[in-house]
Image 1 (tube, rainbow, N blue to C red):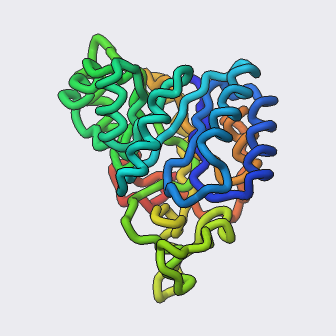
Image 2 (image 1 turned 180 degrees about the vertical axis):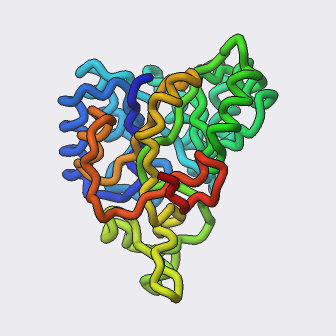
Length: 283
């Protein structure tokens, strides 16, 4: 089992993004996803910038995948999506069925991201006939689900990737929660999400951390951490363990997932993997 570094889900200044991927290029991480997956209004880093980053990562020996938006809301976004798919060099991570259809119609291979509802072997087998090379298991599913699906996919037709470390993207909405929190309309958001490089923490009335608001994306407040499940995943035939970046330290984690470098006080969760509520942490 190898490690992958998922797409950057947050809005960071361009200089910080460039610095981040320069460090990734100097790491031993074999597979890197790049691209904007959350909101097309985030224009600090444009598609042309991500394409250049992808070329530099490839030159450093990385396998690179271009990630697409998880929520397509306008014709302009669909037109931009077509450019992502038909980039001429890199495979895409489809995070929306529109991206799957564009890739299929062009006869291009693709990866299915975690926001695609791949809930059974019949769906995965159908997508494999359309060109899917690998799928990232939806975050709310469990080890037991993966066991049953891997058995149903025998002989194995596609690669399997599991989101193993990071703040989990749980949902996407047409509304921007970060803008709403600041009293701004979505179409005049001023890209306020850039002020929250790990999202905006939302708590219950009892001051219990519950969610992270990341523009139109809702994330878990707790850090998903499945590093202690590596041996089990490898036994199941998982090909890639995904680290979702939230800081420069994520590079070190993805570079060697056996290391424990997280803040000891960080809230963690692994409930979904164990068929429990997602915010639970089973030791």
